[in-house]
Image (cartoon, rainbow, N blue to C red; front, side):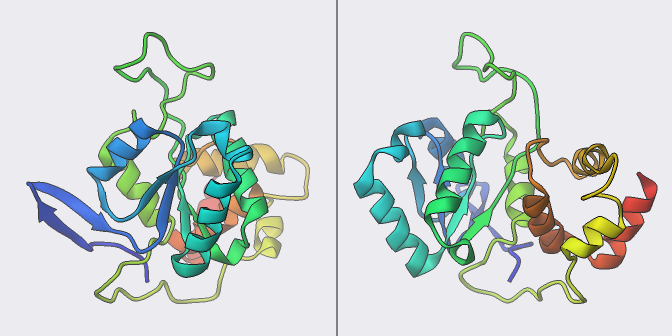
Length: 210
C-alpha cells in the first residue's frame, strides 16, 4: 500500500509512518529524517558497513522481519553503499527511495561535496516526502489502494527507446530529470520507481514527450 496522504501532526510537523527500517548513511541524515518519519532509522556509518559484520547481520534480520527502505545520497558514494546492500540482502526485502540531484552545500559544511550534490541531510523535507511516496512506502495502518493496471516492464523500456538502443541512455536521463530522479539510477532502479508512481499509459505518454 503506497503511503500517500498518511500524514498526521506531531509537534506541528507532518510525520509519515513507515513500516520498513529506513537505512541512511550518517547521523545528520538520521536527524533530518527523524523530523519527517515515524519509524526505525538505521545508519550505515558510511563505508563502515562494508566491514561491520554485526551491523550487516542486524540489517539482514530487519530486512526479513519488516523490510528495508534504502535512502542514501545521490552521489557516487551513496550509490556504492546502496548497491552493496542490494547485493547482500534479498531484493524482495528491499525498497529504494531516491532523492533527486540537487546542487549546493549543507550549512554545517565548509564546502560542498566532491560532486556538489546535496545529501539527504541537505534537501528540503518535501523532497524527501516525495521520494518516500515514489518508493511505494508501506503504512502501518490505513488502506490506500495500490496503483492498478499492468506493470511497466523491461520490454516497455526497450519499446520506448529507454534501453538497449542507440541514444537510450540519454533518453533515459531526460526522463529521470523530468521525474526528478538522480542521474546514477540504473534501468532496473528506474523501472522500480516508475511502477511505484505512474501507470503504464502515463509512462508511454512521458516517453513520447522526450
